[in-house]
Length: 388
Ligand code: PLP
Image 1 (cartoon, rainbow, N blue to C red):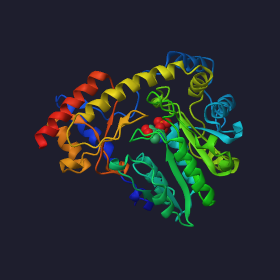
Image 2: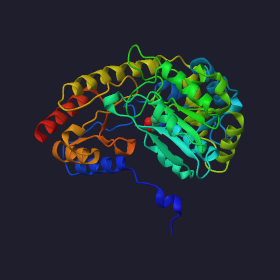
Image 3: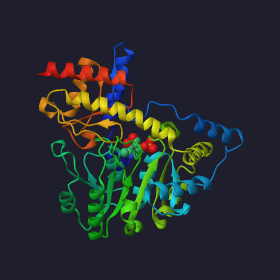
């Protein structure tokens, strides 16, 4: 018999579409996928070499559960430098990806019955992880037709005495939107009015910005909230290190101590030699990150332009990350039916918006080469003209 927790866990709709795409491909069908959530670049060579050197020189044993001391110090320095967040290395936990940072945080912060405030559209793992910690999720709605802007009035109306944690993600997966300084300042004001509420800022796409965009960190704008502000970040997206499973959590010491204790009783330390790759990434200039970000910007522009030329879509042009999240509901299908039919008819794999909190939308990724984006846009165009 499965636990109540396990029974409540939803299987991933995203994976179901990906599995179907693979099956069709194996059966010889010509499949184009714009569903990737990871850079199509190799990890930069100097990072691979640093990890190899660490591996060869014996960094193959258990390390401290919280992470290698040099890496924690480098992360604290990076947070101060790039995000205006002042933390000591003791306030940093190295995790198996940003995902485990979020998981650990939710486990140590949330009690059954607590409420998590989640602006939609959201990354699909947040609600599942919050529910695994026993919390209930209150979704703050938004719509493509309103630019997906964060509705602070709607957010504030959902706050109760059980509200415990607000989740912010900028740049956003799936919309590609970047929160502006004035929006974050308004969030800070709201948090000051509700002292029971902590906030976690997931900044994993911070370096992937369209030209002219700037990433703002709440930590820099509201240092007075330091006692209840957490940052989750990782190396996967910026440095093309998805498979390395390297992320981190930073925030107030009591919660960090608890998250470290949890890690010491669950996964222990992140792969020791991999951490030396991350250290090399942080110690180097951001040239390699900027080069990849530039390439994503060109592809984001290509995807945006192509989508804007298709009929019946409401697109809020993405300004960060590597996704676009158009509203396709004018074509009369929910997101899962849309994606299934698109895959069956045109062999194009996209991700349905439903698990991201908006069943009117589908997610396209531009973390693929330009030819694949163009191929995908052609298939989508054909599909839409056949629907009408
Ligand atoms: N946060 C967001 C918004 C993401 O999109 C992802 C990955 O897709 C993650 C966190 C987790 O990344 P990782 O665990 O690979 O570091």
